[in-house]
Length: 480
Ligand SMILES: *Cc1c(COP(=O)(O)O)cnc(C)c1O
Image (cartoon, rainbow, N blue to C red; front, side, top):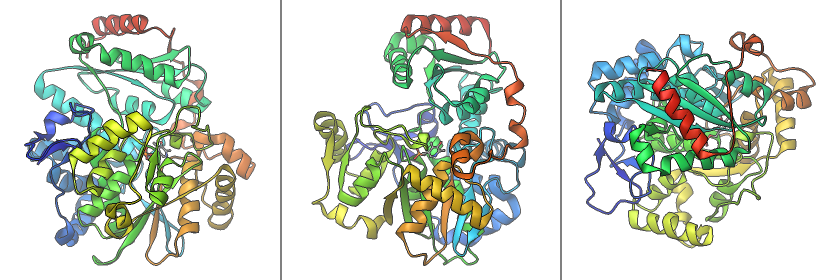
């Protein structure tokens, strides 16, 4: 399988998986996608059998094999087994499902080391990076910025991996106490937590300044683990298949998914699964008050927001101003026309801040051809939904999952099973749980003693030279 950019011209031969896995954006500014989607529609009975006999990792290996042909099969199988197992994810199913009430299901994706669904993909990425860097005899210094879930998922996936160091910038004093405890308690010389005197955008500017210094980047093997990485996306395809197998009894039966969305990574994997022939009827996209994507699916206009227009909500991991993976879907929507995508994302968005597809045939047939629908939710909806699911089903859900349940239960009559993807555990968002239920969230055993552990974090001014000096000194003192 070869990979092309969403902005590529016809005839582009593309690159093999292992050449793009360590990269972020394609050189032309687009995002990588496979040249075609492998088809699994005829193989559903086999996939069901593999799930029953070999479990999540076996299913994951089978699906990934369709996309990755430049890693020997036994190596890839080992990578999947180390990424996805009961020790890491707390149950043999890895992504178990639970029926809340007739036809409404949760798929639990948050039982990994950092209690958010990003672990599902990041654990695979950690294994893939270690493997590929080892093969190439290289090391990588991952430099990233986080306001919460991504950074900690990356640190927990990369800790202990050979050839990899992580430098993670956080806005000082601006993460929740749980998020701080989770990241700063990591005691590993290859993982450096950095508290920057500033806000999240300042952190991101510093990361950009480092990676835009091409000489520094090359000399010190600077890399990233951002949400547009193709391996993260393909890893997420696996749980759509696992959820479908668990919820359905026959191979013809369709399900719908409702996905709390921010950067469009999670639901884009659902789109890929549907293109591969998994029987998905509707992909229902849920946003919070930052409804950039809901607006597009309702109106055909994609208008990115400024940081002033981006609200701070009680489902903070969905507080986005633009959706970094969205370009992948638009590429498919427009019949894989890279020139049009380059114009929309590279020219129109850059110049006027929006593009408008409302008058196109592609947008008019979007729901029929691609199964997408959308809805949005507010703080009051989240609180009411957390209460309702707790009172009626005895299940405590986090505010992001609540956005999903709210949209799932208010938009569609349930004709086929509706699976809401759970994206985090309540323990990460205690304040909203207290507001909704007047009680503390359940604390899984793994997190019970986090608060008591010593903190490992370096303070840094908003200064790129100081950041570079820190990286250089760490690289010379902590071998990986
Ligand atoms: C990242 C995240 C999301 C949004 O997922 P995308 O792939 O960016 O759409 C939703 N909920 C939680 C808890 C997250 O961490």
